[in-house]
Image (tube, rainbow, N blue to C red; front, side):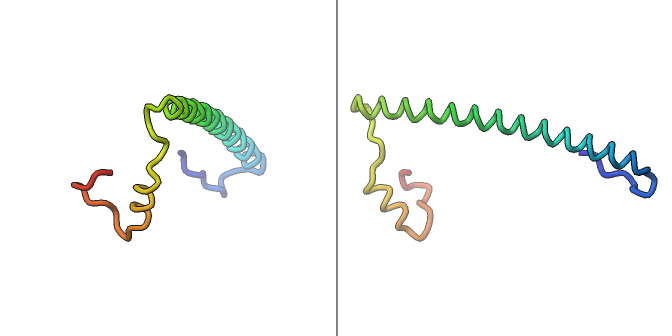
Length: 84
């Protein structure tokens, strides 16, 4: 990211031009962020769908609620030798 120029050296038109350029750049970054977020959402849906299929087929459990309760009720993180 480039530093801002010395404002005293810029004309009003230079300032307007710089504002337009930065607004355009912001729009491009925002568009890219929305595309990335959309891809992340699609991948998460695929992952959840696969997990649901594994759970339905009895290949895995969705969650061990007793284990989660134990982990969340602790004051500290599990030790390295403790299974996650």
